[in-house]
Image (cartoon, rainbow, N blue to C red):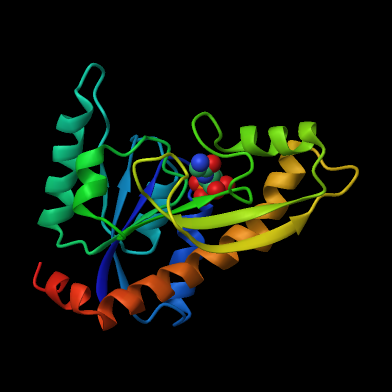
Length: 208
Ligand code: GAR
């Protein structure tokens, strides 16, 4: 199994969806080996603990150079022999040294149909506020590989969700999670882990 880290910043419902899918046997190619939180208050750490997955906090210090923070993150990933990273509501921009080291090995879930309502400043509820104020009738979620462009990496999977006339940002956020994010992300983790394990690229990684 490919050792996988899930990176989180908040409630961790997407982490929970991955943990539940794993427990149900729907992610046979990845081992959820580590949860990395960007802050000690993230409830996702509690979810990791409940599931018996080790959790660590790697927080960017005030004034710390982004590359130095990246080196600290890389050290944790390497120490834990991580071959795949999943950003599940991780709100710190990943440094380029991490993105380069894990090329095509970092997934992100974004709560809209990219290229709408994405990029710098679009996260969490703000994405749904923007969709509602624009007046789109369909939104959804996207899983994509992470590259140096915020929300700009190759798209892996998308799922559409219809907007209702009485939606608020909160009701829409909840429905996008239930109907799209919690379905798409665990499936994408399995697909990518399987692909990496079946490729030569993956075999090299297993020596990590
Ligand atoms: C999710 O809706 C995720 O798509 C979003 O943050 C939420 C985290 O919730 N991510 C972004 O907006 C990234 N740009 P969770 O902690 O309950 O999984």
